[in-house]
Image (spheres, rainbow, N blue to C red):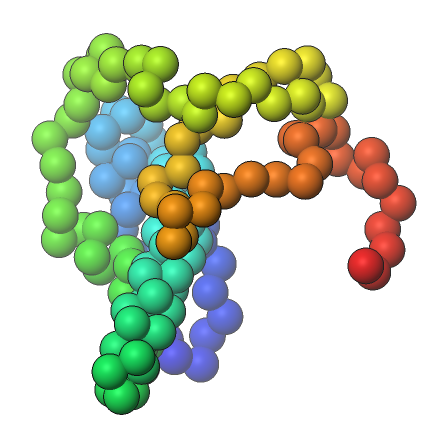
Length: 139
C-alpha cells in the first residue's frame, strides 16, 4: 500500500476495523470508529518518534521512523481490549487545567496537557472559538 494515499476511514474499511464495528453494533453495514482514530494515533506516534530522534541526536545517534495509517491499524488490532462498560471512565477535576479560559462560547476549562517541556506548560494566545472568526493571513 506504500503508493496509495491514506484516508483514515478507507483504511478502517480495508483493515477490518469497520467490520468489527458492524459486528459489535449488530448492524448490517460496516461501522467505522466515531473518530479518525488512525489519523490521531499516527500523529501521536510521529510526535513520539520525533522526540525520541531528538533525544538520541543529543548522544550522536541518528534514527528514522516509517509510519502509516495501515501500520497504526495493525497495532490497534494487536491490542484489542474488552468492551468498556458504561461509566468505566470517571471524569474528575484533576483532568482539567485549573485556569479558566475565555472562549467564543464563554468560560471553559481545557483538558490538562499530558506533559510540559522544560517546566513550561502549554498555553494558547487565543482561546477556542467558532470557525472563521478571523480573516486568514500570514503572520
